[in-house]
Amino acid sequence: MTPSCRPLSITRIGSLMAGVALAVSMTACGGDDVAAPAEPPAGPPRGSLIEARVESDVPIAKEAVDFLTRLAKLSDLTGKAQCNVNVHSVHYNTRDPLNEPHTASAAILLPTGGDPAVCEGERPVLLYARGTDVKKSKNMVDFEKEGESALMIAFFAAHGFIVVLPNYLGHDTSSLPYHPFLNAESQAVDVVDALRAAKTHLATGSATRPSQKLFIAGYSQGGHVAMATHRAIERDYRGEFAVTASAPMSGPYNMVAFGDVIANREPERINDGATILLTLLLTSYQRSYGNIYSSPSQAYNAPYDATAETLFPTDTALETLVAQGKLPAADKAVWDPVPGALLRDSFRTAYPTSNFRRALQLNTLLDWMPQQPMALCGGALDPVVFFDINTPPAQAAFAARGVQVPAFNLEDRSTLPEGAAADAIAQSFVARKADGGNYHAGLVAPHCIALAKEFFAKF
Image (cartoon, rainbow, N blue to C red; front, side, top):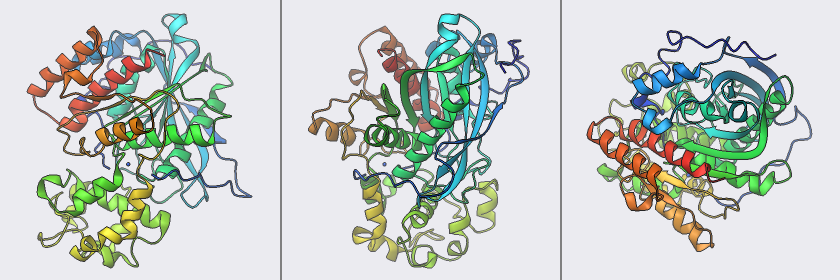
């Protein structure tokens, strides 16, 4: 059943773009061309739909989107909204890294109203992978709180794209008790299954339906997920889906190099939020591969070893976890001999020949060749996902295989496309950078998303 097209009031979604400077959740760190795990003999089919819901009583009015993008000073990047937007959700069956059945959920943004040629009928699909968030209750349907959902409404859904936003395993109502953070194969399986469930839902009872165009994008952790998903679809699902183009943004594609620089213990090369991100990563790989350490105390200092494996995802505030002694007070207190450091220095010195480094190598995304167009984007001064060890090496690796992939560096106008649209994005970036704020999430994210939208317009 299609909801009423009465516009959603500005008052009701007044926080849609609030705090857009923190629009993208904190993120982190990007394999060998390993085949996807085989289907188990029993269990619900992957991607099968458990439940679908219409989350918005009435559509988000395009006038409200325009008002809020002006309020957030993003309207020069988003352009004027062309469609109202409905919000749906799906709960679906998928697999964990051990190929065991689990459930996950995703949001769906549906254009409606406005010009029928743009907003209804068969519309292109954007499969968007979000950045890192440690909240267990993370749910991309909550567009009033989730900055990335708001950005996807303003840049894509209000301009005629169907947007599928996976919450990821371990979050929202997912049955998995941890999150397979930056596990390339597992996250691609989850995201592909979200797309399957979304298409099943939209096949009946929706005036807006998926066309044959499938775009993939993601920011930060989502940049890694987007690239892994592009790889997986072209390798494993060619009879089911066809990628039109992808735009991984500010992602840790070169995971092993990321680990190497952190293990070198150079203070300026410990990324922001490292203690949280390393806890997520070690838990993910230990639960996925079972051989990162023999016991938590082999990797973690006390008292963190007692709770690290069960810490995330959580709805407990990070400040509370620090006060409880479950995380270091400083986000760069990673290695001994820093007081209160998260990890044992013996774990660092064993790193070069460790299973942890092998896992990072397995999840590095430089050893494949995209068949369909791809563009990368980021900012050279990123303190969270280091641009220099991720984006240029990915571009070079693809070029060595004969595939030219543009890599947009917002700090260098010469790397951006020619034309007035890119000129405006570059000028906006310079102006907003002068205003300060969060570089990774608040500054680079919306400008890379704007460049991705321009890139997709060519197809």
